Structures are given as structure tokens and as C-alpha cells.
Length: 175
Image (cartoon, rainbow, N blue to C red):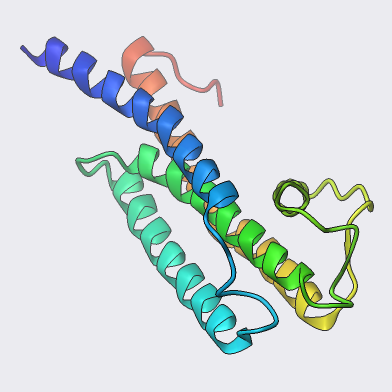
């Protein structure tokens, strides 16, 4: 019975890993962001701050669950939370770009998502650049957020996968 349960949960988890980001991207490209931007700066900044704080708390909880081997789907949740983080930053950049003097080269949602991924991966092509103080602050925050929270999440997943590999194969890491 255990093997059947594992197969069912593995399929469910795989479905969530595929469907979760697809749903997030669909929402990102279809939900109007009229509530955010230069017309409602207080609401936008409060939403951004609360959203990041909630994401950080959820990531820390799932990282803890992953490292302690607690039941549930911490690996899946970490992946989905990383995707949600991308969407939150992209939406923020898109809202900021509506204000004059914040960004050069960022005009669409695709531009904002592209800039978010490029910033998160630390590639930085230079085709889009933050020029306003608010935009630069958010970019710095994204870099710090990525270094602290997302790196910790990815590291916990890698550690868990390495442990499972050793457990299943009996082979150590060779260190």
C-alpha cells in the first residue's frame, strides 16, 4: 500500500510543480494592477512589504520543515514560494515603471518579469535599468532577499536531495 501512496503523492506533487507556476504566471498576466503604482503609493508599498514578510515567514517555515524532515511537502512549497516571489517582484517593478523616472527600458509585464529573473540570477544585461531611488531600493531588496531567503530554500532542497540519494544508494558524497 505504501508504494501506491507514494506514486499518487508523487504524481500530485509533480502536477503542483507544473500547474502552480502556470497559474501564478496566468494571474500575473491577467490580473489588473491598477491598485498599485504611482496613483496609490501607500497601498502599493504596504502590500509589497506585507507580501514579502509573509513570503519570508512561509519560506522559513518550509525550510525548517525541509531540514528537519518533517512531514508534508516542504520541497514543493519552497519551489512554489520562489515562483511567487518572482511574481511579487515582477508586479512591483511593473507598478514602479508606471511612475516617470523609475526605470529605463521597462514598459510591459514581460519586461518586468524578465528584469526580475535577470536580477535574481545576477546576470544583469543592462538593457533595463533602475534609475529612480524607489526602483533602486526595490532592486537592492530583491538581491538581498534572493541571497538570504531563496538561497537558503534552494540549499535546503539540495541538502535533502543529497541525503535521499545517499539513503537510497548507500553512496556518500565522496568527501
